[in-house]
Length: 555
Image (cartoon, rainbow, N blue to C red; front, top):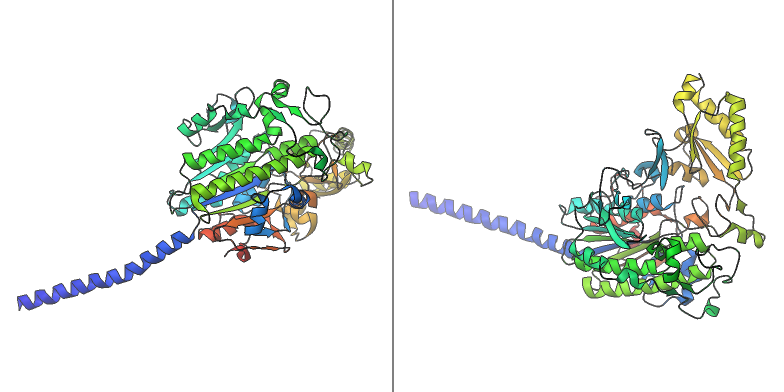
């Protein structure tokens, strides 16, 4: 009987093991299939200050392997917009990767007035970290002011921190905010007399060997050369005259005209910083991004890694020379060539069809208002000094003091709420009085109070964009909107920040693994990008995401 009982017991255990093997094997197979269907590497590219029409305006000058390859092999969202104000670099980069607006991610500007500490703060500034790779304070940066996760953070959590995230940009905020809180590293360029890629102790204590090697490779120095047009300047018919009155130029050169001897001009233009305002800054970023792929073994296994790359030189060139300049045209022609060599590098290292790329911008730009005026388009410049003087006179007459104002910045007015209370004034009444005063000033288009932003639900127009950019904890008491194409800026070069189409309409291109080929004129918004990539990877959306996944682009 014991033998029979033992035989029965053995048989039951054996069958149980077989049964378990039968149930686990298919699950393992499914997991392998799901893993292999994901890209080995996601590359998120942000081109700083890229208007959508640069894709079409300069298309005849582009080669087949850069922008055109993305459009030919991937998906082109032609009606893509920012759905908030302000359209600045910090908020723009944060929204792309968090999938939400400043209302939730907290990045309400590049700099803003902090109502708690009573001073201006920088979106990536952090006095609690130390520079790495330099002794300069340019290294005291981190993402600590961003209040939500990025899809890179979610990928790190999903993969138990096995999937890497690396952020790269000439600008610290262009590297740090996209990479998120859990990034392995973010690197940005410190120019001046050093010309090196740096980071902070938020990420590491010392630079990796591959970064140190890059910094001593003389690559940076090699770009201090003559900047001339790629092609004969007479063929640059997509931009205005090279010699005009609407451009800034470089110190040490009388006219803002080609060519520019960067080595000779560097001393008068903050040394290596001059590279930022030339297309060679983008080339340098491309070089460093390729070095990062090799140095960090990105995309080398089945666990998805993320590389964020922000090309900042387009913004510096745009601010200096403007939307219609020969310099901006040459910069985009050269960026197209950099993208081509970058994609070819991805083909050979990660593998063609094994990576996914998206490309967008952090904002657009207005054409130089002085140029617009010259061709009879309404545009101009705000007289902020006169506006401030008039406002101070109003405050003294209405409230008996100017001290109820703590700060005016980023088209916002911050009240000293304790002072308002001490004077026995009603906060809402003070806000409304200022609204009714400011709306009468020259070149002020609209004015709204914080109370209105908190109590009214706007769904369309500039009001909805303002509300998406309004953070109750961080934003001001009164928000101002200037007239269309009126800016507080120099009369040369261009800027951005508004909710108008020239600032909100930016490219959105996807291509690579898991992406369909096609195009759409249906409206998409910047916060849609992060949930789309999250859906592609099968991971959680960023925790504050308000965008929707663009299912029609996923294959």
